[in-house]
Amino acid sequence: MSNSVILITASPALADYWADSLGLQDALRLADLAALNHHAVAADSLVLVDLAQQNVVEQDIVQACRHCRVLALSSQPSDAEGLYWLQCGAVGYAHAMSTGDLLLQMFETVAAGGTWVGRSIMQQLCARFGSRLPATPTSPLAAKLSERELAVVEALRQGKANKEIARLLDISERTVKAHLTSVFQKFGVEDRLQLLLKLTGG
Amino acid sequence: MSNSVILITASPALADYWADSLGLQDALRLADLAALNHHAVAADSLVLVDLAQQNVVEQDIVQACRHCRVLALSSQPSDAEGLYWLQCGAVGYAHAMSTGDLLLQMFETVAAGGTWVGRSIMQQLCARFGSRLPATPTSPLAAKLSERELAVVEALRQGKANKEIARLLDISERTVKAHLTSVFQKFGVEDRLQLLLKLTGG
DNA sequence: AAACCTATTGTACTGAAGGGCAATTTCCTA
DNA sequence: TAGGAAATTGCCCTTCAGTACAATAGGTTT
Image 1 (cartoon, protein in one colour):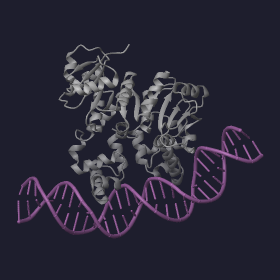
Image 2: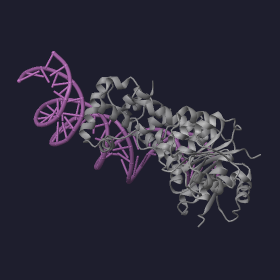
Image 3: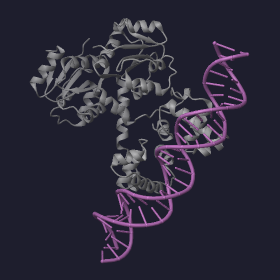
Image 4: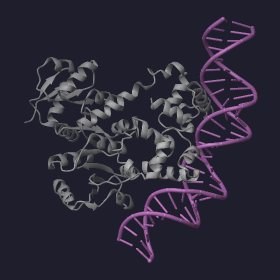
């Protein structure tokens, strides 16, 4: 049940290249994204969009992404551009003149319900909200902390200093540091600030 | 030049399934992630990890992801879990018992340098990414703080140290401190930790 | 022009944070 | 019962954070 495929580019040569690479000689070809939203295309179609001379408004992009799986292909890829389209709902972003193998790869990936993203972009996505994880007790990390470590972390979340935490738990300041050092290691952070971000940032 | 592949799971049956699906009868098998970091595995190896009974520390995960391409496979997939592993640096996340086709798909995708992510997770990633962007310009902080102070605060929110902020803004560390002192006063807090709590915790 | 604000940087000081090394105690498991 | 984590602490050391005291320079406002 292969859904229909739509190639969107103003360049016939590029459309040919895509069609050849993917073995889709009968794919529907359109000049621009706006046209897509005026067509009665099958829902969940696969749409390859050439980002060369995009003069589309964001609304068109979002709408297209809602109804179809959009593969954004740029002749001058940049992480910023990729992130933009992915935010709009695209399921893939790569160079428009990628090798046939890579194109096929992307094609099959998105057809399988996945998302094709280059490593650099994925890292940026992750780096942006950096290591912020839900502080929920369901976090795989919470389980790794001992009872005392949890208590120290809990106090740390209140913005308390080591000395205060020590008084609070009735232990020495050195012990607080020991617990914290252990927690830092388990969370892969370097100091209380990063730990706090990891816990509260979200 | 196929790099080595490592299967990490406590279940021999699952390892068999993976090996069969991917045609990798000779893949190295390990019981848990921690073992990986004690092995001298080839850099950039492909690592399939069973998330079933993972009692690993985040540091181990991050380290593994730094050296290899980690495919996280869960027997009970959830977006939260997927996001967690992706943030740690995994390049793929899916059901451990995915169909052979899908597994192969993921395998080839990450081997090609891409990232395999389900649609739902990608949307979450993008949603969070987007929501972090307008953090500064619209917030009530902007009114109180000068341009430079905002820049410093923005860096602080990333958990950066004074020295890093200085390099980032190309000013001296002393100036960073000056800006911070000013910000502390405006917000009525005593240190960066409390400032962070005031900013993120409400 | 004088007053004022912002940005910038320096020196030097105090105190907190974090960790290395080492020891003790308790409690639990092979 | 021996071994092994977890908790505890001390001493000492390095680095970082924050501030007091000061100074220079470029703008804006009055």
